[in-house]
Image 1: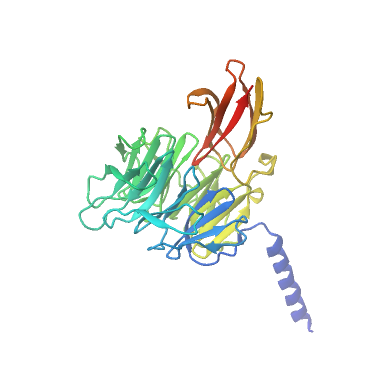
Image 2: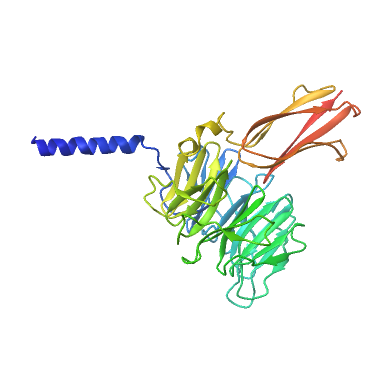
Length: 413
């Protein structure tokens, strides 16, 4: 072998070794489809795609299985899980539901040919955002309180050409983003609405998310006005937070502690100052379009036009913030001791950041104590319950966080 060939071989070997150890995104076995959305239920990760349905992973994204039996339209624009682990899918043909982890699906909401773009869930309420149907029916928000059996329109756009493109909720506050760039906000689960445009542009709002006390809106359908807007006053006024995202389409946001991650038309970007500045963290994605993100435990997943990719958060986030391995799922443990008198300890785990509420009820359903009612980062926690002012008997304690809730019994003797 001449020296030139030898040097070339050594150079190629070094490049391959560097690529193998350099922190970057890694492709999972789901290597097809434009992944538009994610959902998490226990150990199950769901990925919705454009035109090929829903995929399920039970091993943190290592392998995926198609679970689309029953779909009449396999374009999925949103996935949401309710407190009973029922999974809802938004499609152009309506809202579909599965009660058996995707083994079978059936339609529960079809709204005069209006494509369903988004879903939000708060307790017993299921909200569906519908786009205008191209005829005479404007976009609207519909609400169901019986798992999608019956729906009522709670918000209808004033223009027949305006439609609902995105939904988000935090407790009883529901926010809807429209095709013409407006936001409509309800603080009573959709019974009454206020509409705002102050500071926003006139392009479709592709996603909305509550992060702490702020609300963020993303745009992805106009290069000149694409990017991210933020509201710090409940949605009545907005300002752009696009520095570092010039002319990039932004599809979805995710957050972990003080980090916000943006899925864009050219990879994944990160902000550590509430969106004021953004930096590219797309090593390994090769500039491809990212349409969705989800953070599960210590892993961030990206849905792209070529399937699902993942990356360890420890490669991105300061390791000092990761004192312990984050839980992979929401867990409410049985209290100890049980039976108890007068104190007992309740352990619980949170798979992601959010508002957390733990409430104690007596046997007839009356609330007797609120143990936790606060915003908490993902992690594992414990709380003590002192029952010295209560009579002996059977009580219930309930954990609520986002779309997750769980209830267990304990006995005071």
